[in-house]
Image (tube, helix red, strand yellow):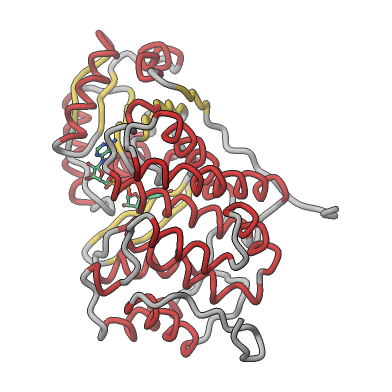
Length: 363
Ligand code: NAD
């Protein structure tokens, strides 16, 4: 039995189901909103946001479809003008982490309440975390101001998420749960959420690859994403998220794909220092070795397994190691340059994760 821990609950109202998008007007009214602006990404997101605006009825004051990945502050400034011009008193984000990121950046600057309807598995809706980019630097902050008041999970909104994005977005969710299992501020409740989140996601993704409109598998994956996002929101992340963050910031690498490639390698690096966490991951996905199991899962989903296939140049590895060591996150295994370089070399070329045991022998 664990002797002591601190568990902080996230104060977000969660509405989960199929067709729940239709409840957005009631949820907006519940928060006292009278002039809601929908925040989304251009293109497909805009069409879904139009539907949501339709369900908001007289409470809608329009759609702002300016969100892009990594939340650049210049985009936020422009969206802020749109929100002010519309006289909005509430933000309704519809989309993946990019749409939610813009909504959070706006909430930080305006203190407006947020309703979020997530359409990917990234999990940002359950966290008080905001990452923003200015130039090529990405900075992350935690603030209760950016935590959404209400999250409406509607399984139907995820049925159109293409197989390839579902796979990498799902692996992005799994990464939150894995790092929550060995987080410095982890606890038994978070570990329960994390193990169940990984199990649901790992079970659902192969089914989604076979049929993207499999509603039952989609419900499992979205529930898994909710659990994994909750883990991200209540713990602090370690090496894996640091590396993903560094590569996203320096090389503008795609978020979910980069997480997918890095995860088995970060796990292999940390495995000797986090045996209990690895055991729980192994149990969740039904394999002997957790890192290898995650690598095999990504491969089976047809997801990318090499950073070079995501456009990273090999010469960038040293810069990434330097940046990761410059302002390191806490990590269960101490960070050292040679080990990080070896990790990134494998991830860059797409090799399977190293199963070296402490002491040098290979499993
Ligand atoms: P995304 O929001 O950029 O979406 C990826 C693509 O999928 C986009 O082209 C989008 O239009 C499309 N898409 C989304 N939902 C769809 C659907 N249902 N059907 C069809 N197409 C759909 O990507 P993401 O991976 O969800 O989010 C990445 C961003 O989120 C990054 O900027 C990352 O830093 C941030 N993030 C933040 C947190 C946090 O806690 N702050 C957590 C996770 C991710």
